[in-house]
Image 1: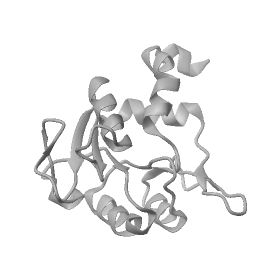
Image 2: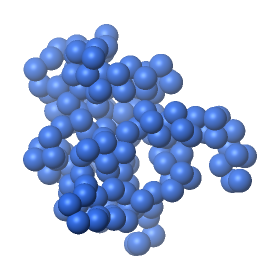
Image 3: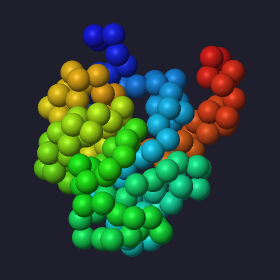
Image 4: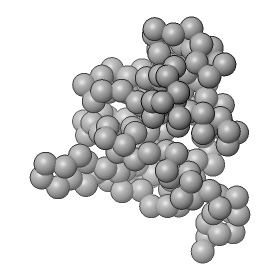
Length: 163
């Protein structure tokens, strides 16, 4: 696949497509991406986006909130869009309606993120293909917190990744 670790999309009729990265690819992503913009981060603690962002912060990731209606979330400055972030971001983690994915992916491409991660229930095949064609790894329909929890022990031991 053009020499980069892209995603292969699998789709059963009526289902949401998902990336078929193996555990090693997900572990690589979680190890390499340290600055994560969470697009659609809610200020409400009971919302999944807030719980996931708080979890990522607790694991040492630099979470950058993106929500045009907020000034600060989880004690961190909030930006209106990916384009408004004045520094490099490794990953765009999307908690947005699928209809809003294409313009956000376009921003992520312009921002030169390494990874676009669409949370559980979010997938957009055309946007994934567009990003993948530009060398950006894409994960769809997966929860980054669940993946991190599943792999956490393996991530802490690089030797275990080779097993």
